[in-house]
Image 1 (cartoon, rainbow, N blue to C red):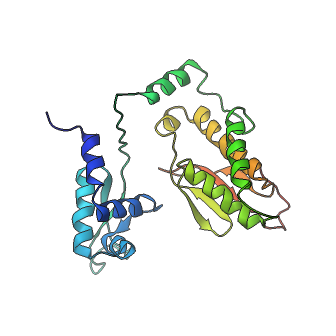
Image 2 (image 1 turned 120 degrees about the vertical axis):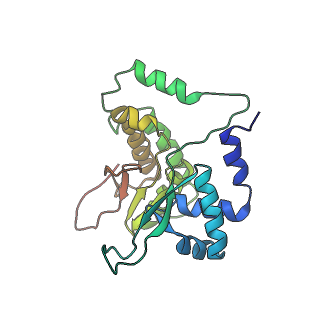
Image 3 (image 1 turned 135 degrees about the horizontal axis):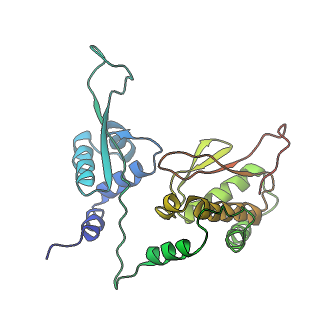
Length: 235
């Protein structure tokens, strides 16, 4: 019997360079070229191409072709092969467990069309407990920018894969509740935003603002540090 696809994918990531290439590509908010991935990881272009194409074959990455010049027609140059994270999801549990099925059935048993408020408990309480724990590791009275870093670290631990769109703006690349967030968007995204708001409150970063910004293939969560002239607060 051939090994399950999940096992093949996990085994492929044991190779250090392949794992590093996958980790780099899947964290980028856009598709990347072989040259960029090779330079970021510190391997040759040929080696990067070999591993990246292997990851595409396993379903961990997907490839697309585009002219990097942005032009079209004669003289626009050759198309480049670019890589981004695949929408395939891999989970391996021994013995078998299916927590996603349980969550799906619970969501279907509730009013999945109703949006959960960012003030909802216990999601907000859970985020608040994580934020308070992280805040204890910071000594003194930190600047708001340091608190934003603290929130970013907590969201990283939860699998949201935060990244800086600007020094004062943290966007979330990954939704840890996918695919349920696509099936039951108001319900699940409301839970996610409640968790994020709780983290911000637990850290004690009242200046930070939690909002939503719908983006394809990434989490809609957004945490910003408004300028003092805005006169806004978050949480």
